[in-house]
Amino acid sequence: MRPAPPSAPERIAVVHSLPLSDLVERMLTYSDNDIAEALARQTALAAHRPASFDGAAAAVRDALAAQHLPLAGAVFADGSGLDQDDKVSANLLSHLLLAAAASNQPDLRPIVTGLPVAAFTGTLSGRYVGDTAGAGTVRAKTGTLTGVNTLAGTVVDADGRLLAFAFMTTGTTDPRPPRRPWTGWPPRSPTAAAASGRPVAAERAAPRPDGRRTPGNLRRPSRSATPRRTGPVR
Image (cartoon, rainbow, N blue to C red; front, side, top):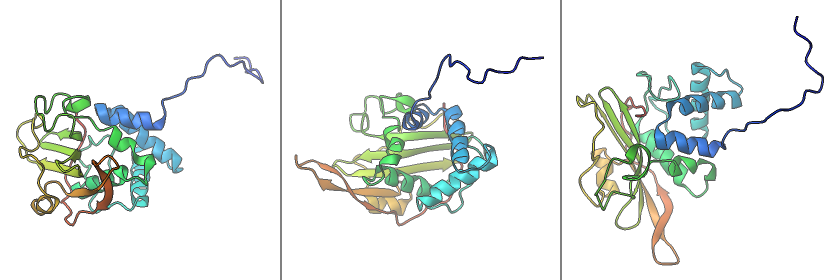
C-alpha cells in the first residue's frame, strides 16, 4: 500500500511552456504538426470541449466563425491538416491573413510574424534563393500532401502594398513542392489576380511619415475559391 501524499508537498521544480504566441510562430515557421495538434486541443479545452479530434474541430470552427471568416466548404478533421478529409478554401486563408495583418487584431499578429521568410527561414529557407525580388519579401506557409501543393501568405509589392495570397493546386504528379509559386514580378494587380483566381486578397497601403508605404485600409476579395485539401510540409 502506498503512503498517503503529504498535505503540503514540497515543490521540487516548475516548468512553463513558451507563450502561446511563440508556439504559434514556431508551428508556422517549421510546419510542426505536433504543435498544431496540441494547439487544436488547447483550443478545445479553452472552449470547454473534449480534447479530441471532434472537440478540436468544433472549437476551431467556432473560433474562426467568431472572427467572421468565410467557412463555406471548410472541414477540420484534425489540427495539423494532414488528414485527407481536411478542406479549406483560398478565400478562408486569405481573409485570415488579412485579419492577422490588421492593426486592430494584435492577438492574431503571430500568424503573420510566424510565416516563413523566403530564402531565410523555416520551410521557405530553400526557396527564392538568389531571387532579389522574392527573397526576404515573400512570407508564406507551405502545404503539401500527395497530389496537393499550396502556398499562402503575404508579399509587399513594388508600390509598398501588402498583398495576401493563397495558391492551391490539386492533382499534381510531382511530390516535391514547387520551387517558384509565381514567375512574374511585381505581383499582378489585385483586380487581375482575383479574376484569375490566384492571389485572392489585397490590402491597401497608407503613406508613412518617412514617405514609405505601410498597410492601411483592408480590401476584401471579391472572388471565393473552391475548397481544396491542404496540409503542412515538414
